[in-house]
Length: 395
Image (cartoon, rainbow, N blue to C red; front, side):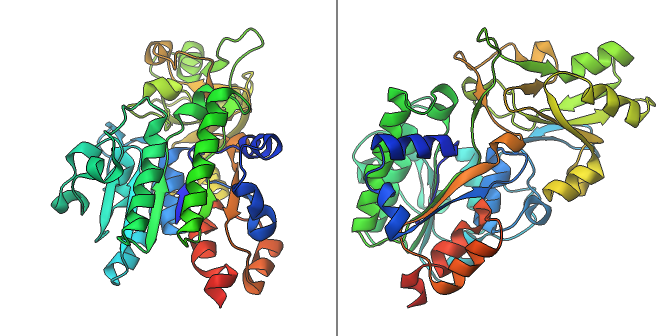
């Protein structure tokens, strides 16, 4: 079983280990394996979940954001299915080889992507009340779990995923399972708050049940999470399209925020990585220098440099990208970000949110211990280590 805990910043793990929130997971420090890995930049949900289930960076699988600009048509498109995917997935290939495979996600947009060519069970908490054999490989999920599907802005959306995985394990309905959670709580609550403590304690309890059922469990995150506010509590936002068009003329650039998805209560479409598209003859270097000069900006790279550094598909890159500092986010225009999360802004997308936990319930075998010691781990190594890297798998 591989778990992607959405928004799993290492600070949650560190605080939970100190405060006794992880009685089961804490044992993995000695009885299993615990480290920190790097996620994919931009540190958003779609690129990282896709990397985890393919074992590869976006330059291979093609998914580099939740939202993109189609250069050929000029349309802005939200990624809600697998039509941009350029590779097979670990889940799909195992299922096609006859291995009983399942994927359970919090959001249905992600399920549609991760279920690409999967001949098995794939459903989401969001749509658990309308599963069919044809679409999902299963029916009556609510009956299996024993409660109705949660609402989208309910922390139980994540726990429903874990309980579904446990039910499938108990029924021996799957031998390989991928469970992907929601980061609603992490967007709203810092480590140590009652809401985040309650979520992580509940996750730990379910991991204990998975281990008791004999599963080898791998746990990682798709990205970290940071506070994005000024000292007075107001969001620390760089409205980059407004800034550049105000300086160089209306219509000079279009800024695309790849964090954008339908769930604005999480982050208000404000993240720490954006793509900028030039719309007139203004010199690209001039635009990039102007962007670098803005408070809150950490890094500006032209499209080819960004694709090379972050292993992104070049043909889906902007003219240049901008990455904000740890405690700032980048938006496009004031009009596009009027709807915010409704709480103190916490978000992700930049280099600062790249580190995530990398945890296994079993100790590594000798080969994978050497691999872990010899190079930086990536979150998309988690399937390889879970399947091949534990002593149980080696024996």
